[in-house]
Image 1 (tube, rainbow, N blue to C red):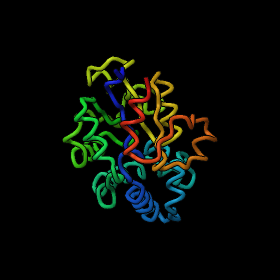
Image 2: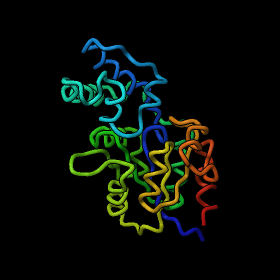
Image 3: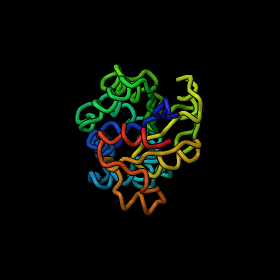
Image 4: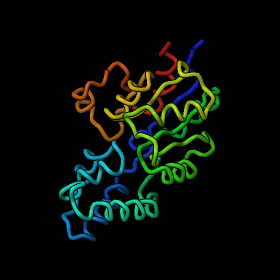
Length: 221
């Protein structure tokens, strides 16, 4: 019998393709301040460490920009109001989650996206499969620190050694490592296989599509 009972999912690039909405929100605030807008590829390479890091990488001058705090507030307001315009689950994700739920697995989402947006997206797309969704909020260190993962495990009432982490980036791999959890890395998200390998992610646990999630978990004894 498989010892794992609990799956902790990353959100962006793992369950949801949010890249277009992230790009549009960044470009909205950049254009409003007269700065050059960014391509989808530039945004793809900048996501994964939360809103502040995304803006540090895309706003001229980063956090040293005298308008940075205002831009950050404007971005978060705009993104919360527009985070569902182009966003949607990757093909096969909801089916994989249904399969996991039907087999009795407990699930949670842990993201560096603002907590309010994480919960809104959970409610819209995955509310029938899971209740626990934790995003970035003041007073808790964001991934790759393990704080939000530990909070999810506690909220689910699971034991640490029953949990697996699933994500799409090197940040997720480090999060799992820092949390002491095995990590499944998906290849349909915001990082290429080459980028993951170059950042030290173990290719042994790569999966290419959501329909591989269940079989991969069942092989991880």
